[in-house]
Length: 165
Image (tube, rainbow, N blue to C red; front, side):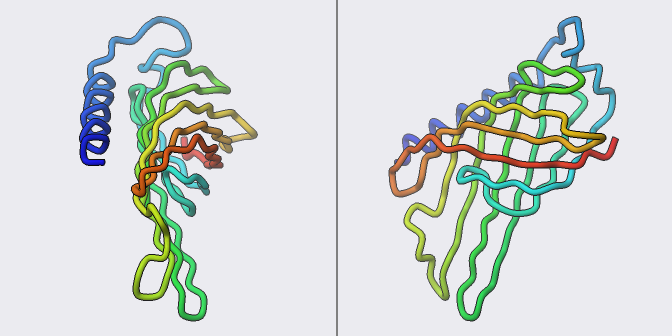
C-alpha cells in the first residue's frame, strides 16, 4: 500500500510540474484565452473527491483546483468528507472542457470512531465540463478510485458550479 501511495504522489507531482511548464497552442483552447483566475462555487458528489459544497479555482493556464467539504450531524453520529481535485485541461472552448483529473479525499462516519472501511481515497481519470446556462456549468467525471482498504473501483462523479467571471 505504501508503494501505491508513493507512486500516486510522484505521479501527481509530475502532472503539476508538467502543467506549470506548458506551451500553449493556437485556437480556442489557448491557456491565454483565460487571462485571469476564474472562481466557481457549487456542489460536488464523488467517492474520489468528497461530497458537499465545493469551491473551484481555474487558473490562467490549463490547471484547476477544487476543494470539497460536506458535513451532516444526526443524533449521535457524524458524517463528513473533505477532499479535493486537480484538473488539467486537454481541450477547452467556450462551452465545453475536457480534462484529466486527480482526486484525494477522506470520509468519516461514526460516533467516536470511523465506521467506514477504506476512509482515505485517491483516484485518477477523465472528465468533462459542459455549459448549462449563463455561468452555470455541469461537470461529469469517470475516476478509478483507490480505497485505503485496498479496493480499486471505477466510479462516476458529478458537480455543478456557478462561475464568477
